[in-house]
Image 1 (cartoon, rainbow, N blue to C red):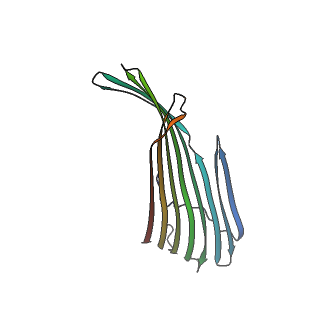
Image 2 (tube, helix red, strand yellow; image 1 turned 30 degrees about the vertical axis):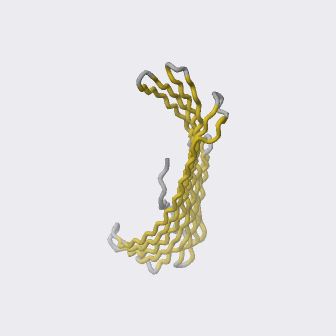
Image 3 (tube, rainbow, N blue to C red; image 1 turned 135 degrees about the horizontal axis):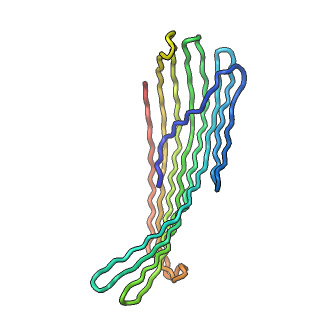
Length: 219
């Protein structure tokens, strides 16, 4: 159904003097917008940067469940075509600066904020046929799932570049916090053969959970 967590997006920075940036926009059929941007302003020993990333990914699907269960002299034959409407969205904003102390030493400080959402709407139309009693019944099941997560990350780092090419020392401190929630509801209704409700709700459940997380890391 989905996995939530902190997403670490690395947006490319430029080290050219003055202002520069790049923007990427994509649109995939049937409906999948995606885009990111990164801007830099370099003046003397400072480089300021700002970046953005976002996408929305719909993922509709369908399935068919069929089964046969025998108990004594009675056999239950069931079919349940199911539609799955799933949408995942993600957004991330990142900003900060680099301070070039000299040619070999750099200090950087950045912060980012983002959110991630997973929405699923499942609809199942079940038909149950019993032999040899020739009895039929129908039910409509609706299951909804919503996962949400907001997070922020603050990163400070120091980098020393040695004279020998390819050798450098990097020290960084990362502080992050994420807050998420999960909400799940399920409803079952008895219907006629056209899946129009005839007897009200047979059952209904709802589940809500909140999940705060904090992380400190030095390396």
